[in-house]
Amino acid sequence: MSAAAFIAVDWGTSNARFALCDADGGAIEIRNGPGAAQCRGRFDAVFAEHTADWLEATPALPAFMCGMVGSAMGWLEAPYLPCPAELDEIADAPVTIREGVYVIPGMRCTNPLGAPDVMRGEETQLLGAREMHESLDAGHALLCLPGTHTKWVSLFDGVVQEFLTAPTGEVFAALCDHTVLVREPETAGKHIAADFERGLAEAAKHHGTLLHQVFQARSLRLDRQLSNDGATSWMSGLLIGADVAGALAFFRQYPEGSPVFVVGTSGLGSRYAAALARQARTAVEIDGETAALRGLGFAYRLRQGMSA
Image (cartoon, rainbow, N blue to C red; front, side, top):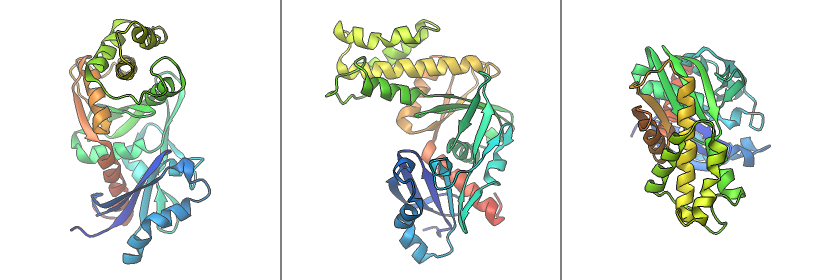
């Protein structure tokens, strides 16, 4: 077994992942914990609860964190690095919470819409993705980090040029859980591939009509063309298809045939890969949890003066 070198924490809004890692960011042991929204005012105690035995065994272990732990609701608010910014700048600028406990800063930019945009947590996944795919250090690359707030990132020679956020996951959850459009309250919903593909096809039909298309989730159910379960998959396909088509329209410097690096969970990543295939794009899927740990590992090695 590899020797423990540091503690990595990917602390999101809804949940946290604590990992005892070797120097490369490989996980020796992983524990799940509560998200930042549940930890206000008690981050120190939650951190201690999940890491006490690790620190007892190896008292000098440093901890590197990313995500909402560094937000206004977090343990300590870390600044946003302005873009363009090199990925190494992110790793080289951790904010000290206390001796031996650090948080990676987020990033901000003016996005292709001319509006301010921010990310927190995804920048560390970008750093890890670069560690896993050296090709991201040379030339142009377009990355998609799907989730509650999907990020589309333009990278050139390891420099984040700009990025664009789509609240695809949040809109999907809101439509499913807080409207009568998609499903009845008692319907849990499950992924049905055929209905997801049908939603993707609908997204490709028209441009600028998403609000009008959304209502079809209800009308197709009432017309018995979609089941309650199928409607959730259809809506997922519609929203992801619209997200992908809209983002590619903004990043036209990446021609047809160039791959898109999709960093996230395997299930969601495969759905974005399917949507990208409809746009004649190949997806290179990268596990988001592994990327976050690899990114924190890079920050640890840089801090220790080790070869990155």
